[in-house]
Image (cartoon, rainbow over the protein chains, first blue to last red):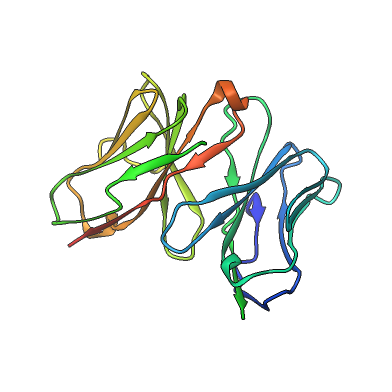
Length: 112
Length: 118
């Protein structure tokens, strides 16, 4: 079992839909959770980060962490074609070297 | 803020030659830099971690004599692929982190370098 599981997709949705992207993990020591967006042939871009459990909202994006279920989500409201990209979750334990463990990414396609 | 650049963006080289890729943090001091490799539709594979002025720490299975990493300053790290072979063709991405400012949690990625070895 990988430490971080993420469905590679692709996930195809119509413009304006609410998108839910998810990751599960096995290491209960993970405390810091990140979402990156990666456009084709580009480096990942940090979208959001959250510490421990709870929700965090930034514009159309909401990150949610449920540590009891070892499950994190990224919601995108009013999705746009420009949101089409691969979304990678990443997580790390606090303390130590903070080297994150990445999921394999979910490919999202928002069609007009 | 937090911009990381990489140069070149793509490079084609012949088998047996060496290629150097530069990674720069433009507006912050990168106390730690990371080098990743990414295959199509795959996640990021961490190759090595480097701290300024120290030798890089390589992940298991990564040949340190083949992938030379130098983190000579707080804004520059280089990855040299020595005696490149076609199987080294990949997308190489660096990332950088300011351990003092961010507490060691946020890392920022460069745009990547597409290496093709013919």
